[in-house]
Length: 399
Ligand code: COS
Image (cartoon, rainbow, N blue to C red; front, side, top):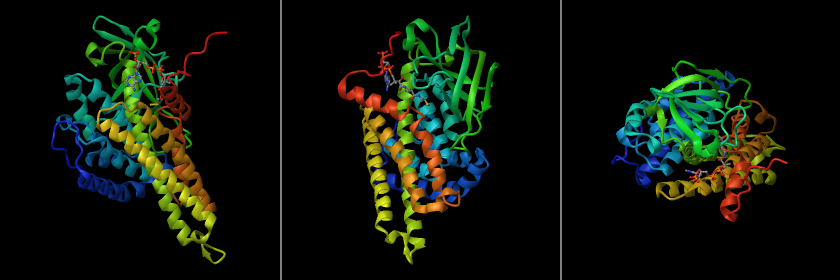
């Protein structure tokens, strides 16, 4: 059953009973379509485009995009519930939703011209096109203002050259958000963001192999060699690029956090089921206090993560500042997902070390979430700066 669309052109909360129906629908869709495919897709490192199409048909790729542009116009809390369920099933598919919806579509909704919105959003919401987010570079991760990709003004627009790294969906995208420096002297105020069609001459993508987790997610390195785009490809104004990136990450981090609640939830479900079924010393594992302690610890982390995600989502829905609360949710939920997955393997013993059960995949997939969209250390620095008013991220002086 595809998403019901909200009754207004902008985002709105569908009300508790509809939100819970949307969650139940996402849960059964995940159980029926995503979970049965997850193990084989991970084993074969297969990016399942048929499954991506089914996710798109559910309306999940444009859940928070206004209806006028092909989305469902839902609020952030309801969107978070959908992402949590998909994250419980397969973080590789959750990554598709997070990148497409939170990083790409949200940026176009917030910063795009009417023409850019009409051109790209309906295609992205329907899944006809995928989009990717080209911020990170081989030499630039946490220090996002320090990009080497250059955009040079031409008579008819811009010429962009540079490289991007760890780009989810990069091999399958029709459009890439490319962040580039227009004037190095201006530092972060010289950055601009461009909507670059990946079919442009000089644009190439290469698959990255050998990942610990998210094996069925597509990850690329991108190369841009004097890629020409028109002035109308710029998202926002010259110098807005850093703000486009940071506002996108406010959304992306929320989505990652919601997906990690799903991982924690999956760890609880798998561990409870296994602890009741598996016997040692003549009794189910669940009879042992130390096993119950591990399950209780997972439930604590899942529920606390969920509440932090709800808090960030509520602030977003109210249109209030939420960067710090989003970082708190992202930090806690991602670290919790790693800890829950580790505990879930412990409950499963040797059985948890192979892919007959989902818990080894949960651990491998959770591990990247404390790295991408801002490491846990970056989240702590954002939280610490907000609390103290002191910036501990200032560039180091040359000695
Ligand atoms: N939304 C909109 N604008 C924002 C913003 C936000 N959430 N956060 C900051 N800005 C704006 C500020 O208002 C400021 O604007 P002015 O130039 O007009 O003053 C500008 O951006 C710079 O802000 P700030 O000084 O806070 O930026 P910092 O250089 O201190 O940011 C960190 C440093 C580490 C926080 C930033 O570089 C970061 O998040 N790095 C991690 C990047 C990352 O997650 N990479 C992984 C990508 S994987 S997809």
